[in-house]
Length: 259
Image 1: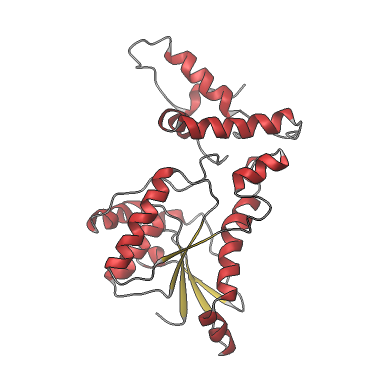
Image 2: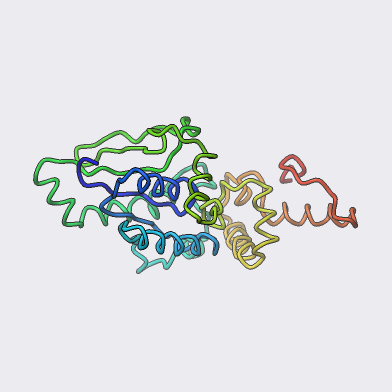
């Protein structure tokens, strides 16, 4: 692969499959970065460790974990608590991802000697992003003077099933969806699943939500669900299940309107 290359590793299916596909094609990146918000699910951190071992076994660079400057806020979760608010996605913005995901990677690459040497030679650093062919609605990042962006999964014509098959082919477990456990982009079924599988994390998310509500800082949204609160959603779901002793109540996004 031309130029210095850096993988943006998200800890999920796509970026894991991208690494495996690169290895299968004899492509070795120069660095692999994972930006940690401090709020990933335990399964994601476990998968990152599994991928770290896979990289070591297969001669790939180790996964470098970077994070935003935590001197003021130890994590994105703590930042929301300190500011008595919610992640910016709850308000329809992507600032939390830019600040806690993209900026730490950019800062690391900017200080990386191979990148600085490449720029001195007038070359660009290639950033490898794990978006597959089924995600074409998610546009491409335009190249800049310093960076060229490539999407190997799209170049190979891979879709989600191809990514899963690659992970299984490598003898690895298919990871859960990578996202903060308090991400406002989670669907209602995912929030309910979180409350069942990780009640401790769900309680922390609700505490964040209640903290912002009680501070009076949610003028345009109701909670982490934007027009509904996670607390009310799960309470309504549990009330519904009590009407069905055999636990056969249907679960769907349309079951609760967030009121």
